Image (cartoon, rainbow, N blue to C red; front, side):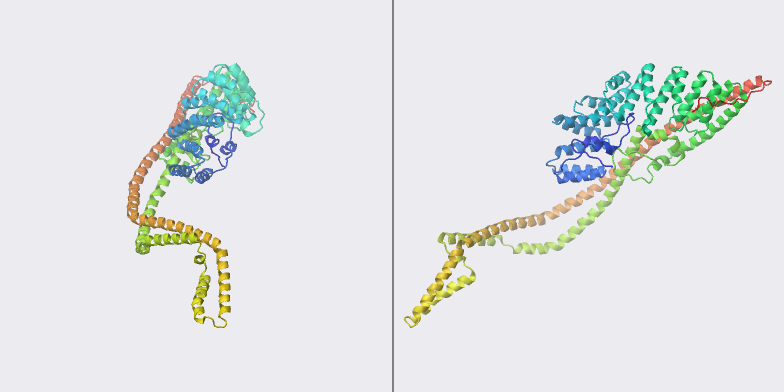
Length: 639
C-alpha cells in the first residue's frame, strides 16, 4: 500500500474519519488519485523514497536535514506541506498548523488550498478537535474535487452531530445533491439518525426504512442495512410502538453483528404487547449465545421474566438459577481479566510480535491476541480513543528503540574518530614533507617567464622558437655549416654545398612558418591550462594546509559533540521511559474502566436475578397448592 504526498496530494495522507459512519475505503485507494510530478531535487526524491516505503520517521528526519542544508531548490513548498503532514502523523498539531496556515494562506492554487483544509479538518476531527475541524471546513472554497465534496458533507454533518447540533447536521445533509453510490446509504443513515434524535421519528423512519431495504450488494451494504433496521426498531420501541419495531428488527440477519440486539428487540416487542410466549422464542435463542454480549446477558434475565409472567414459576426459578450461575462465572472471569489488564499484560500482548516500525499515523490494530480479556474489550479496542492511545504507545516504543540504536551508534562514532585520528597522525609527516617541497613562488616565476617568452615570440614572430627539438637541431646544424664554408673558401664543390645549405634552410624555414600559427595557438592553450592547474594546485595546497591546521580543533569539537550527546540521549531515554509508562497506564485505565463497567452491569444483573428469584420463591410459597404450568415457547416471529 503506497501513498503519494507531494504538494497537491500530500494532505491526502490525512485520511481518517474516526467514528464517522462513512463508506469504507483504504488509505492507498484514496491517495492513488494524486500522482506525483517530476522530482527535480535529489534530496526531495530521497525523502519521498522513504515516504513511499511508509518509513515516515526516516522521511521526517531526512526532510529536516535537507531543509537545514538548503537542498530544496524546486520543491520547497511541497517539502513544507509534506513536513506538515508528517508532523500531524505524530500528533504535533501546533507545528503542523503553523505550516498549513503559512503555506495555504499564500497558495495561489485553489484546488490545493481546498484539499489541504479538507484533510486538515478530517485529522482534527479524528483527534477530537471539533471546533478546529469546523473552522477548517469553513475555509474550504468551491474547488474541492467532486469525489471529496461528498466526504466533506459527511464530515461537516458528523462534526455538528458530535457537537449535539443535530439541526445543523440535518441541514448539511439535506443540501447534499447527487451523492455518489458509495456514499448514499451512509448519508441517508446519518440523516435518519439525526431526525430520530431530534424527535422527528416519522421523518427519520422514512429515511432509515429506505436504508434498511437497500440491495445487499456487498458485505458493507448488508451491515448498513442491519444497522439501520436495528436503529429504527429500537427507536420505535422507545416510542412504545412495538408493532412498528418488530418487522424492522426481523429484517436483521440471525448471524450478523447486529443479530443479538435484534433478537433482544424482537422479544421485547412481543413482551410489550403482552405476548410473553412469543417473546420466549428469540430470547431462548439469544441466551445460548456468547454471554460477553450485553444483549445475551439481558436475555438471561428476560427468559425467566417471561416464564414468570406466564405463571411458570418453576421454569422461571430454574432459569434464574442458571442466570445467577452464569453471572457469577462471568464475574469471576471479569475479575481475572481486570487483574491481567492492571498488571500490564494485556497492553503488552497487543503489540506482541508486531513490528514497532515507523509505518505511519494511519496504523490500526487489526488483530487481537487470543486472550480472555480481549474478548471483553473488542469494542473498546476498536474505539478511536483506544486506537489513538495505542498508536501513541507504539510510536513511543519505536522512538525508544530508535534512541537505543542511536546510543549504540555513539560508541561507533567514537571508534571512527579514533581511527581517523590515528590515520591522521600517521599521514601527517608525509603530508608535511610533500607540502614543504612545493615552492609556489618559484612555480609562479616560471609561469610568468613562460608567458613573457610567448609574448616575445608572438611579437617578433619568432618561428624558430616554436620549432620542435629535431627542427631546432637541424637549424643549428645548418648555421654551423657557415663557419665550415668560410674555411673552404672557393674550393671546388663549395658553391654547390652552399646552394644545398640554402635549399635545406629554405625548406626548414617554410615548415616552421607553416606550423607557426598552430603551434602558437597550442602554446597559448597550454599556458592557460598551466594557469588553471596552478590555481587548482594553490587551492588544494591551501585546503590541505587549512585541514591540517583545523583538524585538531575539528577532532576536539566532534569528540565533545559525541560526548555531549550521550547524556542527552540518556535524558531523552528516561523521558521516553516515563512517557511509555504513562501511556501504558492510560491504555490500562481505558481497558479497566470498560471491564469494570461490564462487571458492574453483571453485578446489577446478578442482584436483579437474586431478587427476582426470591420473588418467585415467595410467590410459590403462597401458592404451594397450585401446580406451576410448564410453558413451551412458540417459534413465531423468529427468522
